[in-house]
Length: 230
Image (cartoon, rainbow, N blue to C red; front, side):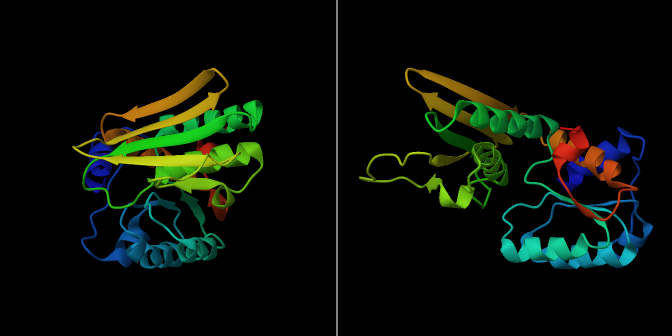
């Protein structure tokens, strides 16, 4: 992702495009930047949040696999700087989340929801951050908590599907950049909302757009929906 974002900046794809070369000095990078983008790892999140807050620059976090402790760190940083944390920076994926929310809200619990995702063989977390983003959107549409209605890793004799559950299935293989589908299955009919990422450049372009949008915003937590005006 770092290479993809660097390529977008080099191509001057946005009015705020432009890179900063500060080597490995995180503090120097933060001080020289208009906005920071973090696609590193959960272990690096605290240092990145601290550097951004100290320098007073906006921070976009696209790192997945975050836990509650990481969100607490983000909440703290958002008290002094604008922070946008998302499981996916693709503009198309975030529109898909919006559609999933609307579909779940409109169709109700008579329709079962399943989320299917596939990524490259090297991806280490499952379900993907994007799949969870879609699940949360669908859960919010129904006015429920995803953590209370999530079904994962079905194997063996599992019994009937729980009413109102949101199911997840993860596939891994090859060099797939990211495929996601939200399947809403009703009585004798089915709706599938899908998005396919052909290249990581889509995430880079979305990240640059969002990071640029953050510049000049008030401190707080933001989402891609804010960037898209949804």
